[in-house]
Length: 471
Image (tube, rainbow, N blue to C red; front, side, top):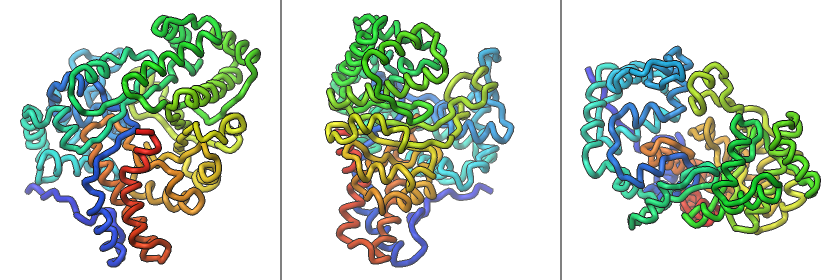
């Protein structure tokens, strides 16, 4: 017997009746506010071509590293999910068979944010009324496939249906930005903008670093054989991104270490890393120097700088060797900020022209380091919980650990940080509900007035992100 699927209208709200009623009222005021999505990883080609999505598997399962990591942890090989290894079978399983496998393991996601996001997608976007289980797998696959043939399920129509005001993608420094150019030339009014991600040309640990630096010079029309030419090339690429609407940069080094070397030392360090002769310590120093250089460029051109250190990327070496990057094997690690950011903050932290948004995967740093830093330095703002912590409990822990020190207005609202386009409404729905729940608790505890909670709910849902990212 097929079991019904429904969304509790009071999901994620407090259990206390008074607080629940207030959270419900606050949420009603912000539920349908336009979505600001200032940091994510959706594919701009979707909106450039407006081509139809093809099937449930390629749309919802294969691009989602949250799903891949959970399934892999339970013994499901990535090959069985249609992820082709470098030495793999050129004829992977059919999408329907992969979807059946996913449905057979859907129980693994009980209690996780992935389950909340997917059920929201199934109900509100595809109007599915029974739970995803082995017995309903084909029904789901066929219903989603049929819907995707309709024009209202094309990317641009969904952009409007989802209430997106602006959607930022994340694009490497060497990206030709062809899709963004096509969007700009198409006349479509949807605002899809790039974000400058320079890690491929600022991290000497990348296997292709030297080649990438050379390509950077070719694209920018500068000689990257010199330190000054390298910096000019980076500034030129930033200008190109800005011409296509970008307002932010994005940086994901292993640690938050920064440095502020003099010109002579910086030039010598660049020469060593470019030649491949740098030690591990020099490589780390160079990444730290480049964060400070990027901050200086942000003051010059007004782009908001995002820093999210602390992930041991591709931790599973066997998986990385066979399948490449971004297959769910990134693991959080301990991250410190007070000492690591000191060189950059000494140089630039008192400048209100710099907007540096800090993220973490190390929750122990919120109350101890990040909230005090953001609650003091004019240049700093605190990003929302993300990746492993963009969950009901993670978001509530974040508010409890940061509000009393940094307040609300040194934070930047919510960003969904997703490759899964169809999950964007679900993620913002969850974030808005949790924030309304937290605000309701403050009111019922006598710590906030009702009218202030209403203003804050709107700011947390939309206003803070719009201001923080200069949108």
